[in-house]
Image (cartoon, rainbow, N blue to C red; front, side):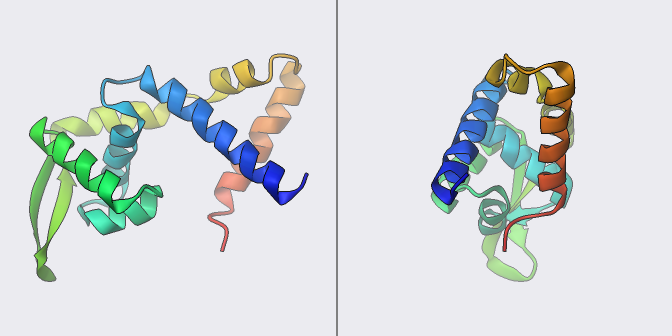
Length: 138
């Protein structure tokens, strides 16, 4: 596998996860991932959320504003820099974030790899978990 193929694979996995997440909530994948980020890391400025999620800052700003309108995110001022706004997940939204995070990827992977036996699919999932646990590429 060359780097272009690896990149393409990453995009296919992202597309499959995004498609599966669309059916999970009316928030959409970006909204769910922003809530998840805030649930895990606590209150964050939009720039930090963008960095952690990999989305463009303008996209995160739009999503945070939408989540705020829906009462799922609270906005406040950053005590370290009063010019920055900090987003915080609303307490009642934590359940949504945790439900999205706990959804199993196995059914999505099974649809992507219909010809694999259970043992082969288990090996793929194990390899993906190993990649996940090693952190981000530097």
